[in-house]
Image 1 (cartoon, rainbow, N blue to C red):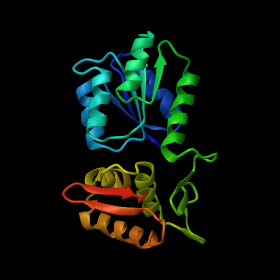
Image 2 (tube, rainbow, N blue to C red):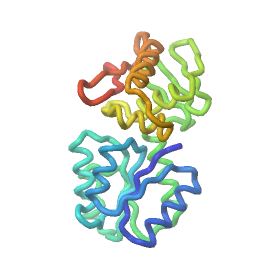
Image 3 (cartoon, rainbow, N blue to C red):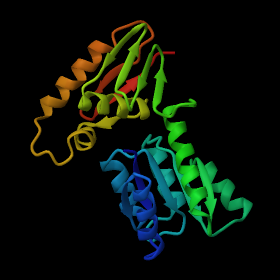
Length: 226
């Protein structure tokens, strides 16, 4: 289930958008100010940010700047009532990926979210298939193809691989990964995550395969040379 960070301070629009995105089977977290948005993005792993420009504490432009400064490459769709070319260009220049002017049709909002999710996984006809280097992973079937070999991953190992693939190049902390994989299942030992990382590393031992790097003191990052 894709995880979306929605940042909207309007007391009516925010909950309405949460309901809309829930109906589309998205896992949604709502932040109502810019500082909270940055904190959520630091603490969690999200697939798309839907971000209002006019926010208390810290405006949307500043939120995007902070995300990019922190090397967070998550796709950002900015929402604004300001439709001048200057504002749209400014939003894109600071690091946003798309820009939608209020009022907007909900169908267009959903279409743009889907487009950003496809971009996150790569430009593929099938959004369930993520390809990187010598591997291809069908997320729904949990089917990993490494070269000519195909294997079906256990559920939690599949979630871990998908997170690393869709956030390639980005450092994901241990707490972020454990939250997305195990959620509220109770106490999970940190070495449990390391065991899953070790299993994935063995699966990705081939020429042209991406590698899972340990970033000391932080977490893990999926990289591919060249």
